[in-house]
Length: 195
Image 1 (spheres, rainbow, N blue to C red):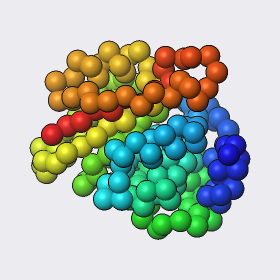
Image 2: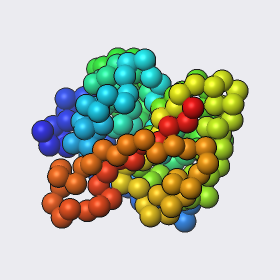
Image 3: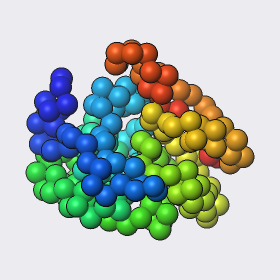
Image 4: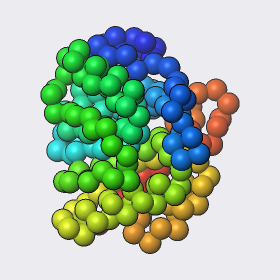
């Protein structure tokens, strides 16, 4: 299916890039391709029992898709009020499982709660990533549990930091290069665990 066909199936509108509120710390909105989300859903790393936080959720594609395909609870975190409003509008028309929500707050200020899976598509700078990982670790220390972090199309800076972070253990990679032309080595999802 095409990107638009998937949107139609979910009764949402998430297609298109938006850099209107990007800056040196916050990267433009660009939705994860549905083909990548299908591969993630089929990996078995996320189940209906998980709660997934999508950092920099934009219009909410990841949350809607994983919620519909897997039945898991999803929370989209978005600092841009315009994108947040579009995600909430999508929620009005979405026809899937109601176990999803969106919050309009900066990622570094968001309280993780009981979530156990975290999704990132290069939403912000490495500086913000370090703060967000600190918040995730605080949640882990308050309530030890197995946690998984998913990084799609990771930047070189992200990879260098993640591979040296003491709290994180690299567990797997979902190769997505075959989904697109060009054999781009960044077309992958890196998976890390805590706990």
